[in-house]
Figure 1 (cartoon, rainbow, N blue to C red):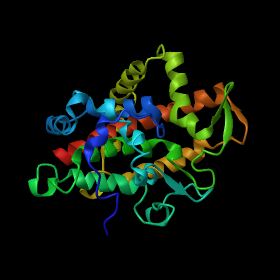
Figure 2 (figure 1 turned 120 degrees about the horizontal axis):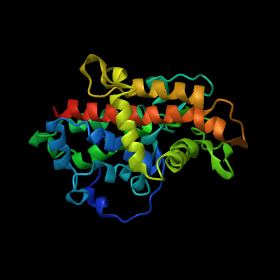
Figure 3 (figure 1 turned 90 degrees about the horizontal axis):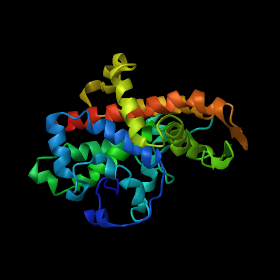
Figure 4 (figure 1 turned 90 degrees about the vertical axis):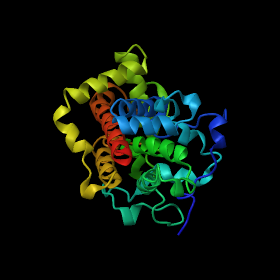
Length: 288
């Protein structure tokens, strides 16, 4: 069965100066995931990524890591590819049960999309297959969606749309819980610890990957049965983190301040790092 999740439209939208619609980790979160990933690419993967990126990106994957959010208003079919809705309060994920869009079509979720774009990129270098896909867009979708699936509330509960309908206060500002995890935790961290510069956050996470988390990185990178990517593993981790940390002790109109921020920041940081490490490992396997 062919669907929009398989055949991608033409690349003209790369020139679109359209407003950014932020979902997922937000601009800084996605930038962080892609910067970490690009720093860990093998030589073969780095060459392929440079080849597939448009020339104006100047070999900077991070500069286009939020592209998939910016084009939702044109690629309407792509919106369900950024998240997974799971049954309320079960705190579990099952591909056949949960990876469906609002029409019940299997595979139309972030896990299915990661599988799809990974398959498309495996045709890189095969001239007969190249004409079937827009591999530049496949790279940008994959890079963005690996970030999305590591944001805990992108594998959230159906009734609240991953925390999008839970109104809270982030300190003195009104927000929804989903946005707190998309951006607020990251932005507050940048303000407090990195002089409001995302580069400081990125370097800190890179250092932790080679130091504090060094003994875990091999496990993060691993994927069973020789598969390039394991999105079901990432989704299972996210719904557990959503239940144990994102949703925990939060009600409508909760005021989330230092207790929430400081206890959840390590979770957000680790998920960003895991997203970057796994994106690199996936691209290395695809292009290696």
